Length: 118
Picture 1 (tube, rainbow, N blue to C red):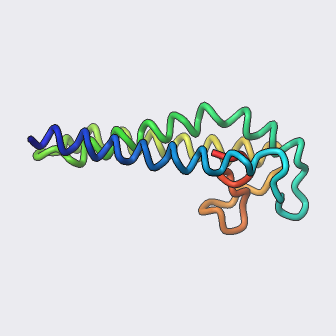
Picture 2 (tube, rainbow, N blue to C red):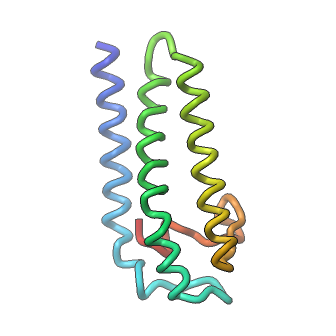
C-alpha cells in the first residue's frame, strides 16, 4: 500500500513538471531576457545544461520516493541530495563561464525555466 502511494506521488510530481514544461515551451527563443543577457548565449547555455536539468528532475523524483518509504534510507537520501547540489553548482559554473547571471534562487540570476522554456 505504501509503495503504491509513493509511486502515485512520484507520478503526480512528474505530471506536474511535464505540464509546466509544456506550458512554458513558448518562452524559448522569443523570451524576454534580463538586461545585459545575450540571447544567443542564453540559448547555448540552455542546450548545454538541459541534460543536467533533466538529471536534477530525475533526482527530485527519486528523493520523493526515498522520503515516502516507511523507513527512509538516510545514506541514499544524503547521496541524492549531494548529487543535486553538485548539479546546481555545475549549472551555475557554466552560466558564470558564459558570462550569464548565475545567482542562486533566480532572484538576480538567469531564470532557467523561463528563458529555456522547461
